[in-house]
Amino acid sequence: MIEVSIFADEVSNDFEEEIDLSKRAGASCIELRGGIWGRAAQTCTDEDVERMQEILAKYDSRVAVIGSPVGKCVLGDEEEYQTHLKWFDRMCELAHIFDTKIIRGFAFWTPSRKDLPRPDLDAIIDEIAAKLTPIARRAIEEDVYFCFECESSTNSGSCAEIARIIDAIGPNDNMMVAWDANNATRLGEHPLREGYPLIRDRVRHVHVKPNQYKTIETVWDSDATYRQVFETLIADGYDGVATIEHWGSRWLMLEGVRQTAELLADLQA
Image 1 (cartoon, rainbow, N blue to C red):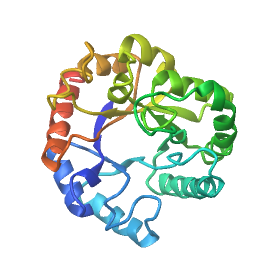
Image 2: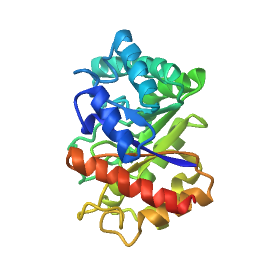
Image 3: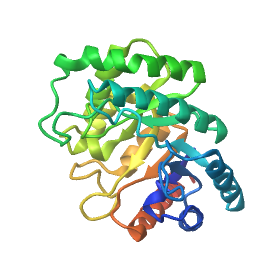
Image 4: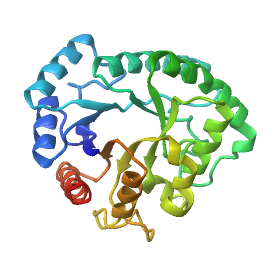
């Protein structure tokens, strides 16, 4: 069963309003990133957590994914890296508190932090793997999934790059994928013919972004549709959430929830 989730901090800066509006639009859960009374997931307090739990219960919602920033740091900056290791410990705590195993993450900034040029992974793959190994081990110990998001500003921009990074880390069933087909498509990787086959067995989370026309009719400018994406995931037994992200405004975010909820209701009827 695929449920609709949302980055609620893109709807409001008030946590209760975020949950209320998102739930009304059709999102049964959220990906926790920011909008926590001025704080983000990595800096929220235990008191914040208690308030969030009360509001989530009030609206019969839940945190399905921890949208962490772990790994969005400079490869080679040891001080920043150590901060991200500490953040990952906190992400694990939050995952346990909110009863989820899914933690979104990344594989360090690219030098340009832009779509192109893509990094020369051959030159840095060993360093990336070495830096991510403590997180990989910790994920096993904590029984959580560290899910690399396809994010062009990082070294894990495409499914091909993520597959290479996971392989370099070595055998680990807790290093998984947050598949953002839109992001990978913008790097020239066809979502279904090229990307998905490389990560098919590792998809534990999905992001949904709109095309240029603010619909999910196509995955960006490709000939693939989100209907085909979800049909493929359902056929392969995907059981998780699809998070709405970066639609451009509060109301467009809620429209993204409605479009995705309608599509999934049709496919899963």
